[in-house]
Length: 145
Image (cartoon, rainbow, N blue to C red; front, side, top):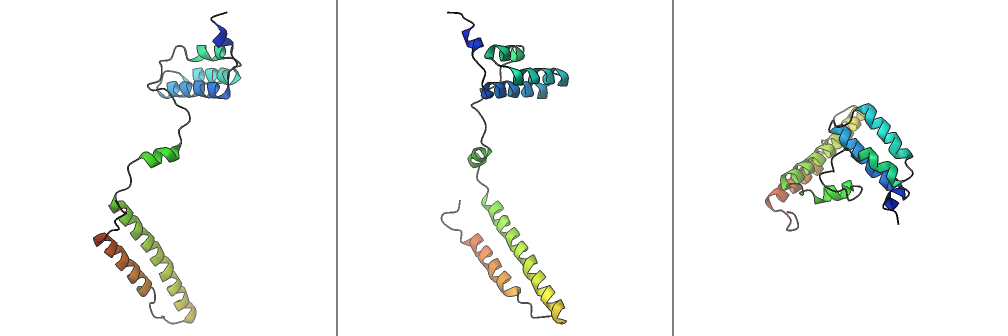
């Protein structure tokens, strides 16, 4: 049996993508010029066997860590540290401000349409909402971090 048998195996799309990723990394690190990268990438995309892919990256250093496959950005976001309680609180105030803009806009439009200033009704829902947000600061849920 020949020792070159693995090189004669047909290349998969994943094999070509892995080679393209290594070439891209080498380009971003300054190891390849743009012309070299384009030539090698074209060759990688046309490669039919593993043996055609190997020489394209043989003069490049091994990657720092092996690639396990595509990275799922949703999983990466889930593993990051959870947002601080302050960030969540400020986000709630941002929602409150958005609601205030909408309600005041409705009040202003109806006042202009009627030709006189109507009672400032947004004060009631915005006041209640603000009170709840302030109460949440002093009495947080047990489920919150």
